[in-house]
Length: 321
Ligand SMILES: Nc1ncnc2c1ncn2[C@@H]1O[C@H](COP(=O)(O)OP(=O)(O)OP(=O)(O)O)[C@@H](O)[C@H]1O
Ligand SMILES: [Mg+2]
Image 1: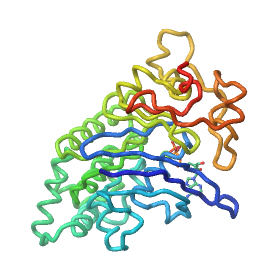
Image 2 (image 1 turned 90 degrees about the horizontal axis):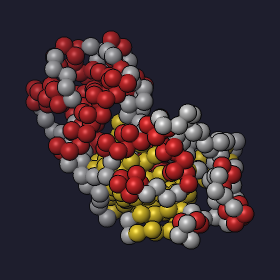
Image 3 (image 1 turned 90 degrees about the vertical axis):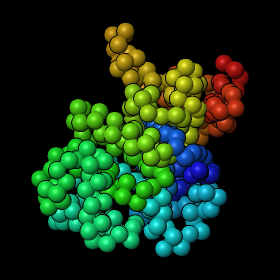
């Protein structure tokens, strides 16, 4: 189990630190897929990157809370232990396959470097392992590929190579932050199918950051909806689709082309996600919520559990509305 407990993170804005993620709790059980959804700027990537403590390199501060891997705090680990965790226990797949690969090194040298970090294999065995990792992600002509540079490959191939590299340390958990948004639609489907089959085959826990509710329905066991730095709804995938309880979740779902097919227009949520530092005083979604009342503008909503496993942060839910 990998768990985020009441985590608050701040970011640097004009010389000051302002809260960008607040009081977030998430659980990532082994072998399950948790989807994290929400509009751009809600804090999804900050939350995802915190699982590898990557934000620290970009001035992100932990203000409160903890991240616990197998009962041990990630913040108590030594630099060596943390290096082992990164890629060896928790791996990350980023949105942009080009920026994550180094253009001046061959694919082979980059894969072999990762294998070297996570295993004690000799040169020959490491080479064989690289070929088998490439085959696992559907790249058959591994020997030729190993000699090529990232530039000469398509976006889909590059993302497959990054997935192969993420698998090199046989991680227990994989963090996929919008792994397909930079790819063509047809390639997206194949990469998702690949990720899903690897996740199931190897029994990995997965945090999938996405905007795409279609993808959520296809892949996730649990769903957390994030708005302005906080989790506003958290439930099983069936509960989220059968009984979306927070007005923000409902609004997000109404924006889906599939949902809107019967109506003449796509619904749009008015206004924008507030940036960190300018969150509303009461419920953070209230300024954009068609159901908001006076109380929503003055009082922050509290978490309400509609059943043991379904959380929504909205006064109306508390009243059984
Ligand atoms: N290192 C940083 N320094 C300053 N601000 C940051 C930093 N990282 C993120 N932010 C800001 O924090 C907020 C949340 O960012 P985050 O990247 O987590 O959003 P997101 O939900 O992943 O959005 P998207 O869907 O666009 O990827 C944004 O306003 C972003 O500009
Ligand atoms: Mg992001």
